[in-house]
Image 1 (cartoon, rainbow, N blue to C red):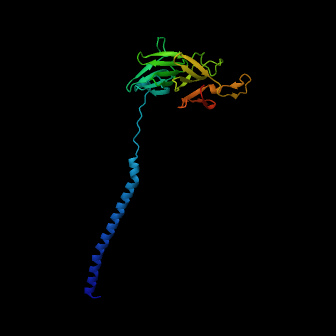
Image 2 (cartoon, rainbow, N blue to C red; image 1 turned 135 degrees about the vertical axis):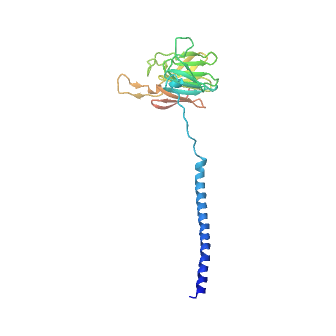
Image 3 (cartoon, helix red, strand yellow; image 1 turned 90 degrees about the vertical axis):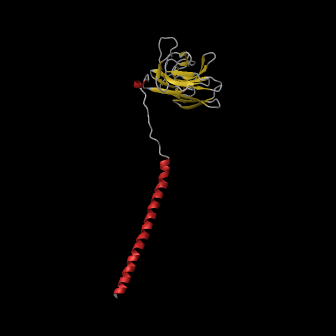
Length: 247
């Protein structure tokens, strides 16, 4: 090949190489940008929906809680948080606990073992205890009125068909303002005018093998209670869910 032709050919090749590099460089940049865009697209929902780090504060004896076994919690209309424990009713204002326990002093709560808390439509606080029945808290005097249940001592099933268990597990209010109590021995209706109790029992029963107990009133042992908008009561028992329409 003549020298002139050879040089011309080489010059042409050298001029082609930069063009190809520029072409591939542009393509490479496009690929990188596309990859970044795809990553941002798929990662954006994750970034938008990232959950905050959950933070828990623990309150126990060291922080002033009366006892570490908590059975019920309620925040009242005033903003206080009430905590029912196995040994005392606690009122928490966001900083400190005020503890209420049963004592010989007048106006103290009937029992320190708290199992149920309920604030009625009028803002009154009602407390269900394990052995002392029903109590009401007076915000003005910070004293309690104790109503018991008009019953004999606690037991899984009372011998008196009209007796009501003293172990109150849940409290509900119907449209008329009557309070309903889920107890260890029947469903109770509390009349706030006369301060009397009406007992409802035997929602269901199952046969027992023992001759001494032909019927087991397990449905009388009520653990949960709710009143719906229609006035129907729903009871959680050892025999399942019971729907009860009060007379």
